[in-house]
Length: 614
Image (cartoon, rainbow, N blue to C red):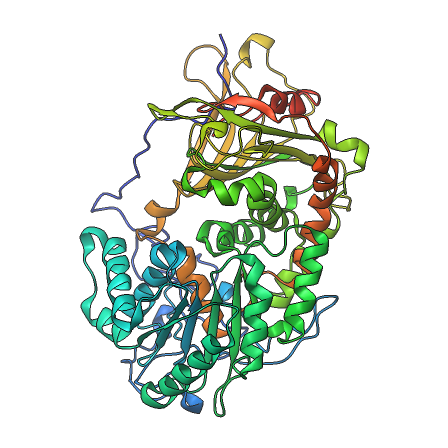
């Protein structure tokens, strides 16, 4: 009797511990004896690499210099108060190929910083539009508190909330204090960091379409520049309905807040997804924003790119000679990318009715992960190098013909069912959902990439709500060997080799391969070798918004989306929007707690494949 080779093993795995008398990993048992070692051996944590023989190059242990850290002002007055900054050489302005002007950042993005490197931002005023909303409470304020606790925000950094709610400064401080306390959990709030943040909290009440709101905002920002030393640097975060993005930016321009104050170095705008709701609206929004802002000032955020394990896709591919040579059509049979959520739409029914799975997940999260998985190696880990290759990968995706949508795409809608032992109402029973809604809560599709590396390899993408568990992963299924010399009865439990990159939860990597089963017969079965992020590094990675907010303050756009990326992504999904515009067919139904409609299984069965069970 065989086993399901696509089922991920659920047995707990314990990390191997080194006995006290055994040498550490990569440590020679003879201590200082170095004979036979090729290249330097490293002491302690990974040391930072800058470039060949340049400043900051790795030194062998016997030549390492250990100097105490000194608190001193940074160059140019940035990072006052003794903050330590990473000074990067080689600032230069690069010219985009089809993407507008690239920001004046270095060739070394934050992705190439060494482990343990602390980057610190210059003093700035952070203005959050939509500050009374859920995102500010759950994500933005806890992220800013964490950055301040790690001394990655400068003393004097100030936060101005803008919203329709009539809170006032004290009301805003109280609400943000509750948010920080809720996020801290049992660990408690770092009171030193909170005291510094709280002192710089201000609130401006008013409508986003009211010019008086922006006049009051300008006065508050100028006061903070003078009283708290924010140096004229400004970061605007638009956590508002997408319909007001262009209007907010236009009003900022009308009062001169779209540029840094005299003596300041930057004024940047972070925009939350979605960037439009179709190709035409995305292009229109882009034109409106560029009437006021330069491309280098725009930071389009997708929080998935801030996840350590999404960035790890690049590390796995380009840091390991065992993976990249087989990362192509010659060895890869197919690729599956899954973004599954166990919860229903809950209180987001109003948003979801308008967006659906296509606009909410596919156009941004899924296609961004696809781009990182399929892109060519960049010339360097610079913002331009990485984003240029992502655009090329998205541009090579085979666009659907109108007649292909029905055969290559499946959309579904969850019915009532059970998830994690709890009963879940069907989508049509959720509050705020139209009783005849045709909004998809599940979407699966087959894409092709027409280039030298991936021609002929199907990429299967799926996302859904009300699925058995919350999981995001990339799974590469490799082609089989040309010939199996084993008897048919000896390989009944042998499946295809696979490399699975687990993005969330249980972040890590699983390699699935064949091995002999202990015993007298030569039976072969599939086994798994696991790497766990948490066990390997013994520390929790920073939250995505911590990384992205810091990058925006530092002017590093690597993990943000360029305008040409946005357009390419909409070009891929626009045929689906057009095909479904007048389609009265209801999405395929599936019970909550299952892995989607049976029609999605048939999408793979045509090629003799099946979905993985994460």
